[in-house]
Image (cartoon, rainbow, N blue to C red; front, top):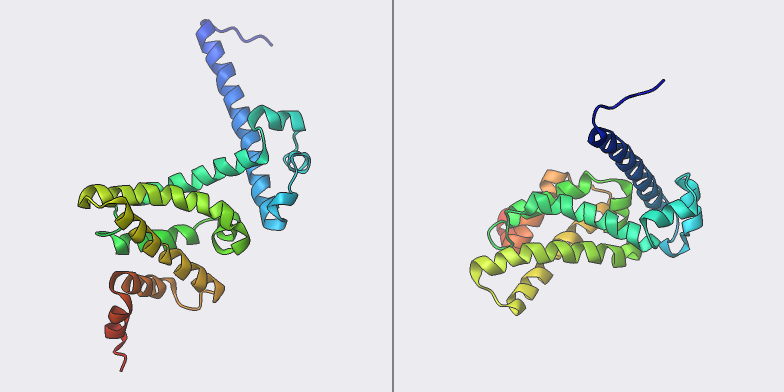
Length: 205
């Protein structure tokens, strides 16, 4: 059977689209299998040979898209960071503490096993730090611009807001025994008002 195109440009676009779909399918296979392998074994033990085998491609195909495995990981980090930053793009640390905490908890709870692992497992701190730093730079920039804060004040605020991550990790470590809505409320009180706010909330004697 012959397919005749009336326009060479249309044919080229069709070929280009098919190629784009194949490339995306291949890259998705590489990324999904890397995520699975990270959940199964130490990152430093992962090889291009084994990753290509699991993704059902040959090593040459891998090298058409990435130079090293770190490049795949970086692409995954950018994807997650971009999704989260879209949620908090209109917030800053000073005015929107409650909104940022809610976004953080709900976003983390809606991600896959790979993301949960790099968020909560100390062995993946080096992976998470790159994502965390990217998000912090974006959010602290909004705070600094609005309130004309110098870099040193920004650094202190950013360091303080990392507490949200620590609270989330402890909550997960404890088996999520506190309902998420209660946990979000507790985290918001602690970060917004400190221990004095928690004391007022629970009428501690």
